Image 1 (cartoon, chains in turn cyan, red):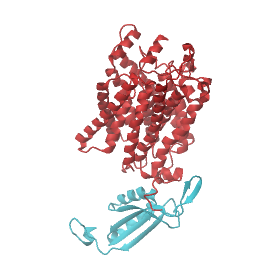
Image 2 (cartoon, chains in turn green, red):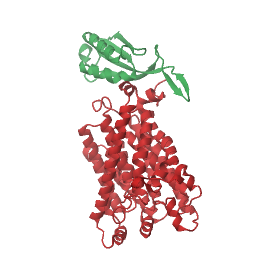
Image 3 (cartoon, chains in turn purple, cyan):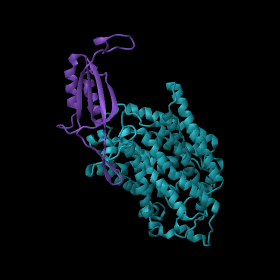
Length: 113
Length: 443
C-alpha cells in the first residue's frame, strides 16, 4: 500500500479531481496548506508589491494499493500542470503505507483502502 | 397643476425639479423634522450597499470574496461621482428627447440647487443624495448574477453605461413629474420606492447577462459552497435595516405616509422570511439560514413598489406570495440549468414583478377613491392592474434590450468574461492581487 501526497496549486484542484474521478479514483482527502517552493507570489498592499512568505497551496492525499500508483500519479501530473509546466505547479510524494484500517468494520490492509 | 399637486401629497410625494419651484412663488423654509429624517434615510440607504456587499460576498467561494464585494463598493465610487456630475440631471431634469430622459444644465454638478429648498421643506441636496443611493445600489444588485466570472474593468464600464442608458431613463419615466409612466392611468403607475426602477430593471438585466455570459466553469456539476454564510446573514440584516430608509424615506416626508411605509416594510420582510421558513421546513424538514435571508429579501423587494398604498394585511399576503414565487423561480432555475449565480432574477426580478402587479389588489380605498375622482367617475382594480402591467412590461422590455446590446458590445470589444485560468485562480488574486482570508492560511 502507498500513500500519495500531492501539493498542487489551488486553482488546479477542480481539474485534478475531475481527472481522477474520470479514472474512477474517488476517495481522496484535500486540505488547504501553505508552503514555499521555488514559486513566488505577490499581493498588492496600498501600492506596494508584497511577496508572500508562504503561499497558499492545496494538499491532496490518496491512499491506494500498488497497482494504482502509476495511474494516479500520471493523472495528477497531467491535470495539475499549467500549460507546459510552470514554477509552483507542485510536487508528488509517494510513501509506503504500513497499515490501513477501516474504522466502521475494523477491516485491515488492502481491503480497507 | 392640481392633479400633480394631489399626487405629490398623497403617495409619491416625490419630485420637485427646479422648474416646479418657480410657480410656488414664495420662499419655503427648511422643515427640520422632515430634513433630518431624509438625511437619516439617505444614510440608511447607503448602509444597504455594504449590506449587499456582505450578502453577496458571503455567498461566493473564498477565492472570489473580495472581487464580489468590490462590485458593490466600486458602484459607490463610480455611480457616486456620475450621479453628482449628471445622473441627477438625467433622472430629474425636465424631459428632453421626447421624454427619453431628463436634462437640466443647472443640475449638472448639482450647481443649480446650492440654495434650493423643495416644497417638502427639504434642501434639494438631501433629495439628490437620497436618490443617488438608489442609483448606486441598482447596478450593484445586478452584479450578483455574473459573480465569480467577469472582468473588473469591463464591469466598471458596464455599470456606468447601464446607469446612463437604463437606470436614468427609467428613473425619469417612473419618478419625475413629467415622466410618462408617472402619469399613466388615472393616478399614475404605482412604484413607491423602486419596484420597477430598481428591482425589476436590475433583475431582468441580471437574467439577460447571466444567460449571455454562460455558466461558471464546472456549474452545476461542481458544488460551489458559500464561503461565509455568517457574513451573508449580517448583510441581510443590514439590508433590512437600510430598507427603512429606502421605503419610508421614499415618502419624502416625515408624516403619516412615512409611518405607513415603515410599518408595511417591517411586516412584509417578516412575512417573506416566515413563508420561506415554512416552505423549507415542510419540504426539506430543515430551515436554512440562507433560506431565511432569501425570504427577508423577497418580502422587502415585494413591498418596495407597494409601501405607499397597501395596508398591513396586504403586506403580509404580498410577503407570503413573494417567497412562494421566488422559491419556485429558483427551483425552476436549477431545473433549467442557467447560472444566475446569486439568484438576482429569482429574488429581485420575480418578487419585484409580484409586488408591482400584486399590490393592485391591496390598495387602500382612499387611494382608489382619489383615482376615481381624477379619472372623472370610476377607477377599477382591473384598470389599475393594466397600468401596472404596462409599467412592468415597459421596464422588462426596455431594460433587457439595452442590457443585451451593452453586454454584447462589451464582450465583443474589451471582453466581459475573464479567462478560464483567471476564473479558476479566483478573482481576488488574479484581478486584484489580494487574498480575502489571510487568516485561513498561515503566512
